[in-house]
Length: 107
Image 1 (cartoon, rainbow, N blue to C red):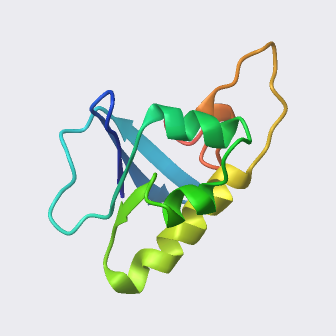
Image 2 (cartoon, rainbow, N blue to C red; image 1 turned 120 degrees about the vertical axis):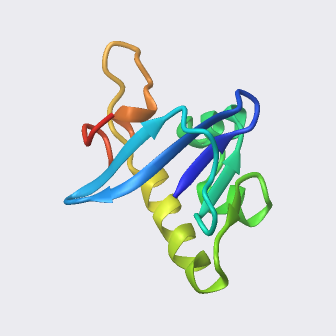
């Protein structure tokens, strides 16, 4: 699965590993048949700030999911679960890596 933040042009690939996901930042683009998720930093920020739900962002197209129809619901559920994780902000740092279930797994 790859994620594109369209405003920065940053592609990141997430690969399932034991216990979570590993990430590779700055990959060229989605490969053939690969699930792709597209959004922008403002949308992700609003979700992390609690001003927007991930489910609503997906349902309204603020987060686009390009996946085979049989996998769309699973991808949506994965994204909603990842964004629903709420960890305390330490030292004022509000890092995505601290607020996602794949934190500490290879990135």
